[in-house]
Image 1: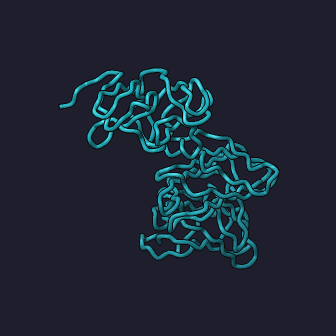
Image 2 (image 1 turned 90 degrees about the horizontal axis):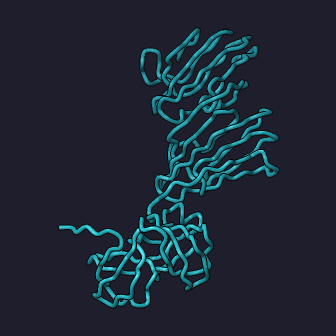
Length: 327
């Protein structure tokens, strides 16, 4: 039967911890106090000097500001992880992303000095802060920071390209959204690794467009989108699935446009013919109007023709056709 203990708690030491006062400790498989692994989980800070099989006094998270032995120069306000001696050291962005940060420094100092920290747990994955990204800057390439989970894009000035490095931990999510756009500027994002069957790049052009990417060991996959904006696509052009509406000005000869696969189930896209001097097709994966899964084209002939299709995870399903047929 378990025994309740309020701060501080008392546990037997697994080894001689007489030189580890004010260092972080954890519990071993025998439920005895031991020094943590570097960047590992802790139960609190040791406040006395127990030898093996003597009781140690430990203050854990929720006990307020506590003295802490430092393993390097730490500044007040730094998020801290622990080293293999249980000393507190400054955590970097990757440590924070992986959840290795366990405390916030309230009084800093140099190596082996006694500072103060407030413990908040940690040693498990954590969300990161949002950041304003601005691909409108001077550089033609604008890579997104893999340590940020919310990327707010401002488009303007000139077209840009960028990359997104592989995720830092399984389940890490990146939300990429356009919060301002002007001048017809495009930002093309190409993540380093996308999972099999997923799109390899994303073209952001319009206010309100959004993509959510989730990292797993085999690459990023799209787990959410918002479409926005209207754009014309010329003959032989590829349609941007992040646009909400594609407008078609059909020339005098037979034409063809390409519609890629949808990004997520429920992805909607619409077509509108603004002028017509011939016929065009939209090539892609479609269900026929009778529901069979063998459609390869939307056939469009006249100005005013309209079509809206929805992606079900395998094919585009026509949900509204005006003057348009599936073949």
